[in-house]
Image 1 (cartoon, one colour):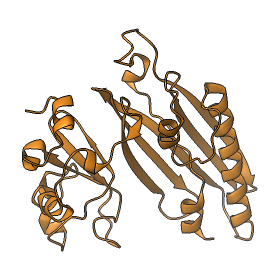
Image 2 (image 1 turned 90 degrees about the vertical axis):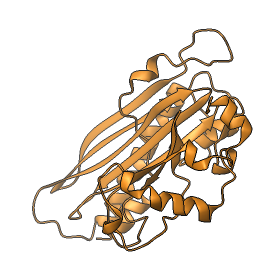
Image 3 (image 1 turned 60 degrees about the vertical axis):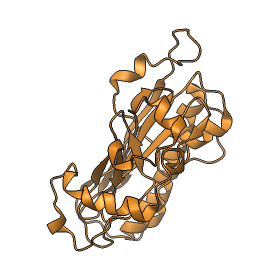
Length: 261
């Protein structure tokens, strides 16, 4: 079975872990308490082959107060051509994606001999991490175990500027060069969330990626599996960079809006 192909080609959904903030995040520019965030969920357990049961779980955030299509397209970036962003529309989308995923797995695996009972899983979630100063950070997570020895998983971090209806780019935050930032990331590697040190890697610079998010004190770069050193699996790692490390390069508008001293 083409296990890697299955995992990569799955038209994956975004799924949301339960989020404490999701019930009471209001649009700051309206001055009116509104429920900005809701969610839709789909869970299913089906036998797709005689010996294989599929457990499927997915969730999508719903944003009733967001109307800008370009912004919404960016939030649901993995699914092209969405026209209905309502709760019912996104619930239907989940069903369509599940059916498409099941069809792909069945067609790609139908010639594979499976001799003992197995449980395969596809999961995805979309989690709102913070909403601050009209910046909304969403973490997208997806995982799949479809018969391989080990499952695969992937994190995507995106921050959206709700005031300007756009996804944040690194250039919106800092003018630092990628070469300089790469060196800072290497310097800060030992501060990663998994406890690895620079002795665990054989490189002296860390590639800059677009998988970032930020808070009042730092910007964080999240790396999936073997993205730091291709072929060398460290697991996913998050490396923090203090705003102080980017002193003199921060965008003045961003700095003022985030109240960075």
